[in-house]
Length: 233
Image 1 (cartoon, one colour):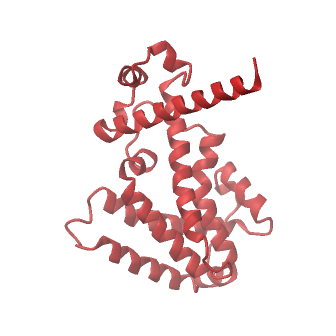
Image 2: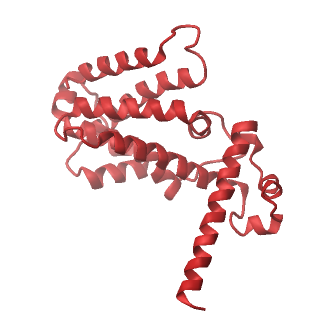
Image 3: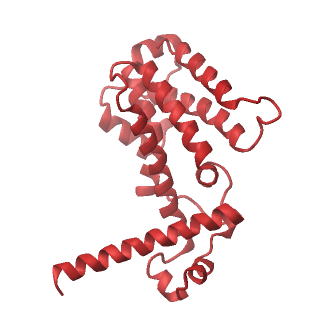
């Protein structure tokens, strides 16, 4: 078999896998997480059940692949938002990444719900591997910012003591590789920042702000500004 033929087959296989994931996302949008079924997707695509199982051997494998793509989509959007932002300004970088997070979530509400909200019946996220690493990318980006402004943040927040064993091993490893001298307390602050941003966005995505404010974006922006000031950035 020629190299060109092998390359073409690999490309077609990748395209079919992408189509399967796109069809699963459509099912997610119309029927929620419980609607994701390999047999139903095969039927919608005109494939046999046996053929689709050659791409994803279980429903959980497909969901994991979706979650990897979605987490990476979010982290990619945040990375793009940081382009052109001064590399030595943690406050400006936090503002950029926070606004990108909300914009992505509002524009990808069903995907947001899949990775952060509605549990898929019978599914558990793998404890290690690409899915776990992808899930930590957004938090790792926040930790990069915390590392940049750590002395000021540590003093402003009066951080309680922490140890690396307090955190998911994959997250701890990623942070220690990127910032060898950073203390574990900085990861705790990163998670606290994430929780504050995530909480407001989750309320908006699930419609809990609709009876409280006519401008959730403004409310969120003000909260991000207050958060930045509380970190002395």
